[in-house]
Image 1 (cartoon, rainbow over the protein chains, first blue to last red):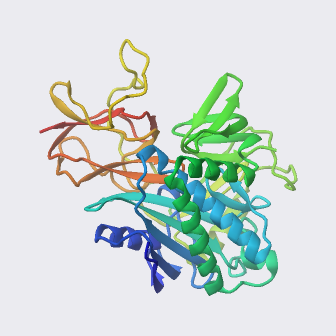
Image 2: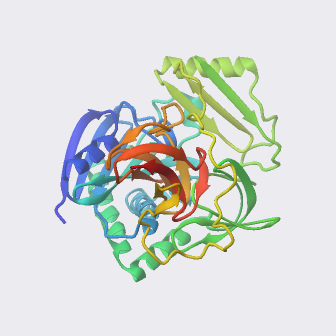
Length: 244
Length: 177
C-alpha cells in the first residue's frame, strides 16, 4: 500500500473529496486532510462542526477485499485506532460508544463516518474521522457537550504528530480485518475499550423503533446485542443513549 | 431560525454527574441558544442527552424524512419458510415479482432512500436508472453502503419504506428492464 496524503486548508467535506478521488481511481492509502470543513457531515445528514483549526479532519480511501457484511468492522477498527492514539499521545482515556463515537466522560471528542462507493476498481470504502483539538472557540453552552484535546490536556497538541500517529494506527487496525483471526482481534479490542459492549443500560432509537435494555456483547459483524424485557434484539444502526 | 424542535421522553435515566433537574428548556433559554448558534454562524446545531433533544437549523426546508412511497406494508418475510441464510451470493434474483428485476440488500442494516432527511430520494417510482445509478443507502455500524442499480431500466416498485430495517437479500426495488 502506498500512502499518499492530500492536505487542504479548507474543503466542503474530506469524505466527499475522498469519495470523489476513489471514483477517479485513487488507490487504498490515499488520505485527505483539511484544516476546516465547510460542510462537514455526520451520520445521516447531521453536521460535524469543523471550524478552521479546531480539529483534525481526516478521510482515507480503503479498498478492502471483504464481504459486504464484514465492511462495518472497519468502523470499529477505526474507533480502536483513535482510542489508542488519544491514549498514547495525550493520555486521554476514551470510551467507545457503539459503534464508533469516542467519548470522554460522556462528551464526544471524536466521531467516525464511513461511506462506500462503487468504482471501476470495485468497492471503495472511505472512512472519515474528526477529532476535536480545541473547543474554546465554542460558546460555553456548546463546548460543554463536547470534549477536545485542549479541554482534556490544556494544549491543542501537535497536529502533524497526531496525523502521523493516526494514519499509522488507522491502517494497521483496518488491515487486520483482512483475516478471520484479525477480525476476531478487532472485535475483542473494541469490546475491551467500550463500556457500551456489555452490561450497559441503554436506549436505542433505531429504524423507526425504540429499544431499551441491557447490552450483551457485539456479534461477529459488530452489531450490538441488547437484552430487552421481551427477548433479544440485534441492532445494526441507530442512536444509542446510555441510561443511568 | 426556521425550525426548532424539542423532544422529551419519560426515561428515568440520568447521565453521570448530571443533576436530575427539570428536563426541558424554557423558551427564553431556547431563544438564547438560538441566538448563540446564530452568532457563531452555524447552519445546524443539534444537542441531545437522556432527557432532551434540541435541533436548531437555518434551512428553510421542512425537516422531515424523504417522501415515503407506500409499498408493501408488511415486514419482509420469505413466504411459508423461515428465512435461511441464503447460500448464493447477494446477486439480485429476477422474476420474483411480475418479471421484475429486484435489487436486493447486500447486508443487514437500515434502508435510507435519501442521503439525508432534508434531501430528495435518490430514485422514485417511474425513474429510469442505469447500472451505476445510486438507488439507496443501507447503513450498518455507521457505514453508509451506497447501493447501485446494476442494471438499466425503470423503477416500478419500492418495497421498503424509508428508515426501515432490511435483511440480507431482501428485495428493495423492482426494476422493469
